[in-house]
Length: 164
Image (cartoon, rainbow, N blue to C red; front, side):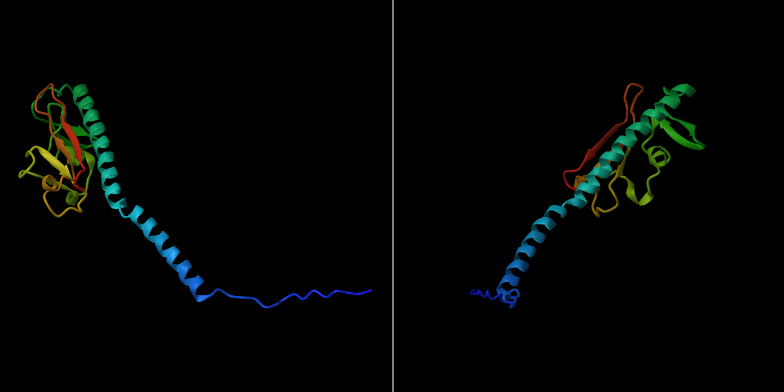
């Protein structure tokens, strides 16, 4: 009987320098593609915050009007109403566009609100996330609250995000 011998090589090979460079290049390309997707997250965060704030403002204005109607002051041009222990300035039953009106109800940090008179109406309070150095109206990145102007008009709340 003849036995055949099979030789098994115990010699192992590592990666060559070229293989390592190719893997590093592929990983770098993947990182660049993934990073470009996340670069726009800042704008998305600002826009989402403003849209959420718009909804909260609409709710605050509606609830304030309801409370004013219960108190019988919804038709007064200007008045003050106690809401949870805080006096809030109202115009036709809705929060007015001052720090004692909508800004107080929303409890927004003072640095994030500015009352603008240059490119926006004086009765408008503008929330612009505190990260824009120029006028919000020029930057086209703001949440604007314009107070009610009559007994039949609601406040106008709008968001402009084209310049964020």
